[in-house]
Image (cartoon, rainbow, N blue to C red; front, side, top):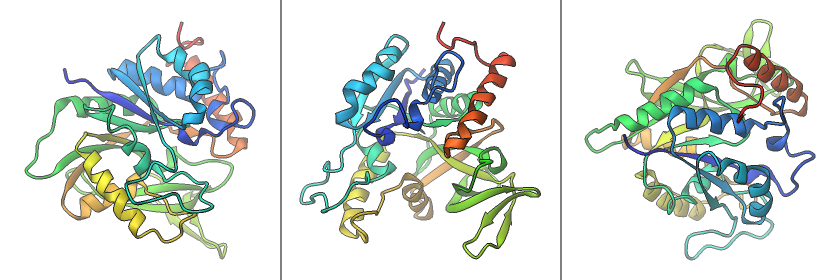
Length: 305
């Protein structure tokens, strides 16, 4: 069976470990953090290796808090996302403090990944079903004439909302064959008594079908994406509008590949409930959700015993 790698985007964790860093907040009964459950589920689904994308200055702390524990369970490697890691001829703009985005993050691991791979955010819980479906898709090998073959875990919008405020989601259009035809980044989606709605600045609400699929940045890709990201990053920097804020984002990149007829993206629907700590008020609900999963036998109380 073909090897597969899980790429975890964790460069946004921040410089202070412990208090206030949402990705490292304990949410399980034995001090587990969200990333522990993701890696547990990925290894169980069949992934062979984990690549953490982090900032170089966090390496020592990250290894102590997460990496060293994981190395006992799965092969681990590190890629480093830095703001000054730019194509020849480009320098970091004055005053830039924001990372360059998920497109650059994935590009950082091009020397480490030679096999089909999945990409996830460090601070999102995706559930077991999505890891199994993405892994199974990647090992099957998909060939099509002149197009790259990728996949995406699609979550139902209603399973990804916060009770504590609006969220940004990539709302997906899917054709009859289950292929992604477009991703629309949509801000300020809220839960309402009638389901879900986009809260506009003037206070009005546009209802959205809470069953519609959304992207939570869980992609199944192949190394064919790396040359695309390399060229695309240089083009992005050439046309950079706001040097302080512009981001090179994977949903936008993949959407362009679809529109240009260069990629097919199969949407693999998951019925699992996504959760994460978007707001600090979300944490009690996340702890409660893990407690319910443990009570239902989905996880052991001590995850890695």
